[in-house]
Length: 138
Image (cartoon, rainbow, N blue to C red; front, top):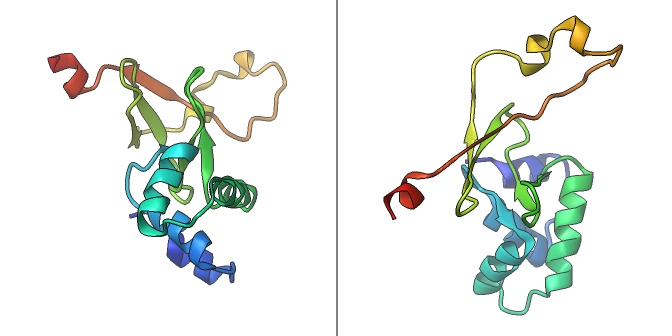
């Protein structure tokens, strides 16, 4: 689990019923929902939740660093609650499924000094692409 609810409680973030249900929807392993998917799942738990509330809550969670936006080449933004553990993403080219992966080694260290062009590099984002087993079968 991503422990998102615990992290939000620890930082004293006010958990209204709407915020709580959004956080509950996002909590888990390999969670990468679009805003519309978050809204649909949240509405299943709290039917009166407004789409704008979900969008605003997601924006706040991104702003405070508890959720990360993931963009995969022209597809809708997805929201990743796994911000405490360094990881990369594996994306299915056909259906867009995203899985967290934890490759060995530091991608920043792997970039040769001559290829850095004087940049002070803080982070590297690596996306692995392929075809998931479900799409490969059918």
